[in-house]
Amino acid sequence: MKIGEKIRNAREDLDFSQEYVAEKIPMSQSGYSKIERDIQEPSLEQLKRICEILNLSADSLLCLNEYSRLSQNDLSMLKDLKSIIKKYQ
Image (cartoon, rainbow, N blue to C red; front, top):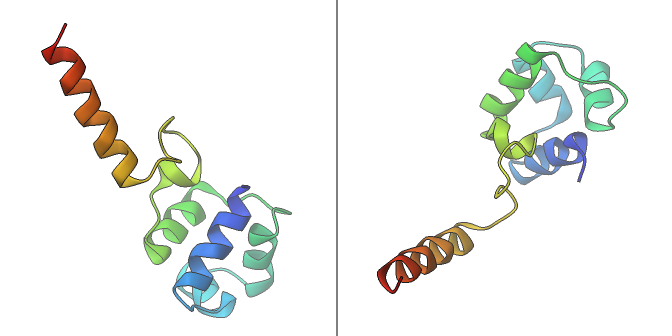
């Protein structure tokens, strides 16, 4: 999934309009729309504001964490599995 799509999904989940988010960044609605459509990349400051407004983590948005696609339950299970393996080594 591309960054713009992740941003759009998060905005829609919060039931925010593009205008609302753009105003909070601040930037024009048309510029923000280009970010959601992956036509324009956000600046670092815009990306920071988008993450704050939409309650997103930058590492998951940018796929910086190799486990970012795993759910919290999956991560918990991996942690438990790791401790079991250590116990019986």
